[in-house]
Length: 295
View (spheres, one colour):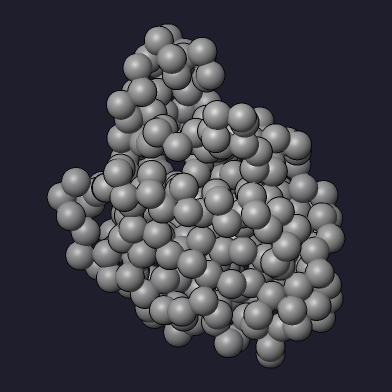
């Protein structure tokens, strides 16, 4: 199965740098990403489009979108008041109406908010992507139904009901989802949020969608975690195993939140420290040969 991959720009954010870098001192992280006057750093909310040789289109995540009202948009540092992802899909010659499946690593609003139509005063949230199957890990779905007080604000209260009512929700428990096929395989992580689903397209030389296990280049460094991570030490252990595997097989990393770089290879220096290398700002039809997909 031939697969071609594009990075898809979504809405961008500016979030508190201290929250994004957890226990990393400001004196250090501010050298990597200089903050603005409100101590916020720039973040992308990037999606990835896969076009399959059989004509199907699969979108990996949707970014934050523009579902927030103006007050919440300012609170969470969303820079644009329009749905940028929809514009980016149109620039690639498609639209949300053409997408056959949307794969979601988890249901935090900065990864799933783009499923919703832009905010309109007095109107209830409505779901976009009218033909897509919504592919979600079973464990993270359960988490979204019963969140902990620590991460309750990260979920969209209306989204679960909308996804269920669509009749197109698919919950994943294993490495392969039959309706997608073997061209994409899943593994799961618990450190950021229970059941975070990580997607890998192809095998050796393929691409791994890192989601919030590794949001961008600074977080490739093992000790660096986010204040939003539920279990930081567990995340570090998971990240080490993930990076060792991807380095050994030449699998590249796709970053959701890096504001400058969409794709990078994994490197390791003579002290054993991981880092990003061979960086690309965008993906523009990156060709991957993957196992044949099922229908």
